Length: 123
Image (tube, rainbow, N blue to C red; front, side, top):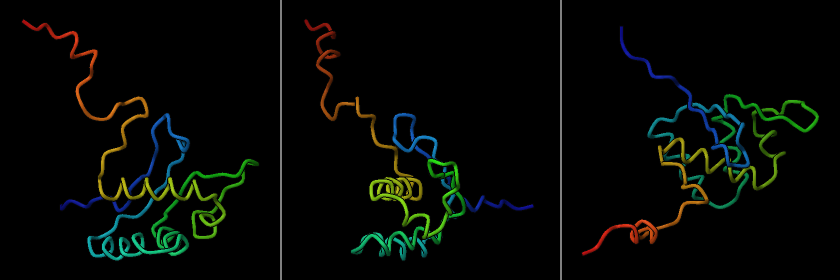
């Protein structure tokens, strides 16, 4: 019996992220499909990006404040605010490319930590 890889990926968000709790299932892309999707993602306009992303959506647990489900399709995506769409697309890129999650806001960029450096004994 051969190996069969699951055909879906999950986009999720860290506890400190505004979209924490949202789980989005998308289908995997072949390398060839990714190259085509990347062309759209690098191009102008948000609606073409939304439409391409919608083709990959399998499901999500996204609801309106009244508890009704938002459809996991282009119409549902287009009904969301711009910030939501942008964060979702960033999550998509991270998951599909295998890029690491961004550092927490409390993380400091670059260079040695002055507190750690000061605690190292020097002769």
